Length: 224
Ligand code: CA
Image (tube, rainbow, N blue to C red; front, side, top):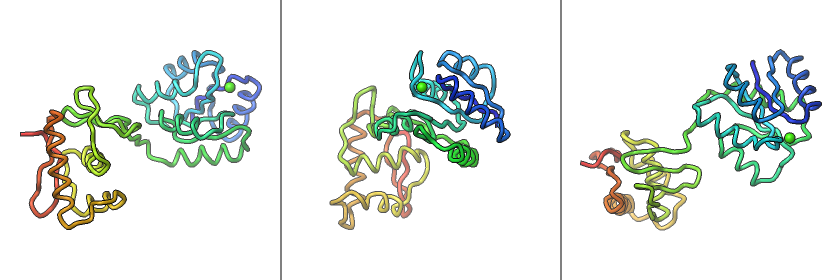
């Protein structure tokens, strides 16, 4: 595999490169964010290993840039920052995995193997349908840049439907998804919820509507 590594500790970067090369990988090693950007533009890589603390920037920004540019290859963070917040932030910005320093080389190689087995299918951060934008990081919905106020059960239903926009969502799927949200247990709970969501979408000028497919379920589609 051709790997692009960014690590500002040159000695550690050289050791990592040696170790990865010993295991059959081709490694381009950058010591700064600027070098990383240049190498990323020049060559096609199969995997990225990104240190977060860099002299001229934050590795998390590099990861976000790669993803914005449409990169779907695996990205592994290596860093001394082991806190939950840092890990969540790194993963939310597009990394696939996270290794806290100091780590064992065997574990690094195992993570690389695991990442290379994954299909390069990255879930987008934003899903759009009609005039609605669903920010999957915050879990919020926006219409014309304004946040839509939704109850927890409406939010869950809309999230379920917008990620399957234009496709049938069965009542069974909806029932399953709503099980964790309390207060929706009566037989016509789904019907009530759907009509509430329909009203919310209309009021928000969403340009999309929940349509009934008789006897099967619902489809989120352009409002007629
Ligand atoms: Ca560093």
